[in-house]
Image (tube, rainbow, N blue to C red):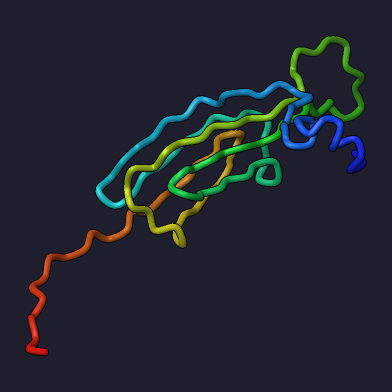
Length: 129
């Protein structure tokens, strides 16, 4: 889009639209004392298709899926569609961002968010100034 066109219709420049359906994947969230585990059902995705971001205490999981034809076959009838997955979660716990891990197997994405150690209570000495 040229700058001239953006000036005529600025909403087009800033609005994000999807040309494919956006799916809301099913998610189970498990908690232990030291971590949260998200299990996200995203059939058809591989590690290259998934994007996970953690910013401002929001976990955002996105992915893209396309139907993959069987090798040596021609599609006779199909219901699988190209589309995008997207879910976002507010994370209430303090998370150790540097230790977040994710994996995918058979279209199931697992995300482990380790909790930060809780600060220990301590007595603070007062000095004479």
